[in-house]
Length: 436
Image (cartoon, rainbow, N blue to C red):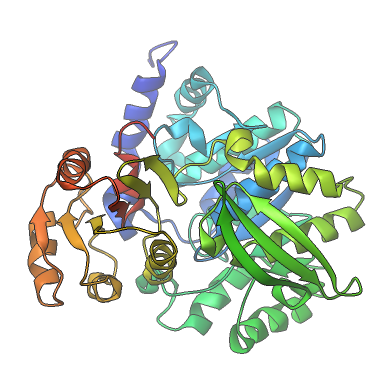
């Protein structure tokens, strides 16, 4: 007999112990395919069919795009569900309604109710979480839910939904052992979220990748929009903690408008066109979204949704940032932000997981920086001492401090007030930072 009124901690510990978890187990935790999720969702009454949804995939930018779009819809007066993964601090971050995280006792109740179904449906931790999110959004009667894929698209558990709009932010190299070794193969997996006659917005893509998406859109008669062709960012810079972007709308007599984003990493310029195109498509479907809603949502995304870890300032004197960029494109984007930030000595705290192409990540890092190699407390983490040794071959020098908070304390003690400290390389590393 199961215990009654399981606590939140007890329930999560049970789920972590009994289910495959990607951040701990890596590829072996994946259940590629929709069968398990579809069967489980049917068992709990197909809650995903009781609310409108927007589906977002992409190698980088899907989390930022999800949160900015959710913030805009909240400002427009809609009750908005938001499902993202992984979480940084607390599991409840994955499931939000109008910015409020799911109640901990609801998490406990859901896991307790379905612990007998772990084996019955062959669930992974992620599949359980997807079902939990859908049930919560249906229970709260959200007007619309923004659903971020976990990995890929075609075989991702979230792909059981029938959205009113699909968005693909971009395609770059990540999870090649699962999604494919070429950008076209990875794009084909992302293209799996494109549904029959459902508009598909691509935030940015070169011609080859755009053709992959356009071909699939044509096959299923889905209206296709390459957003950066219409919304062109002409100029951008950081100002008073906001990223200001001058955007020209090619479809509206070259109308130019300035947008101010609370998410001030320069790489957000690649996400904004997709967000603007998405709001246009939603308006066509009857969503009432004003320009004021867009401006307010973009300028208050963190306050409205609780997003963390995107070029997030976590200290001054010395200026300190953290960023969850964890693949080649993500690291390149962080370096662009570093170059745009005036500083004396650059100090980088870096850690990554074993199943990345660690050598390619290290090759992108600047030799001019002083390094502290660190690691998350996960079995998938690349040992910081091995990372230190590997980095020497690429003229990156520093020390190894396993605990990221101890590494940050050391870096701050060594730094001058006008230095710059950046913590990056792994979402799991950032999640262990205190006070963010």
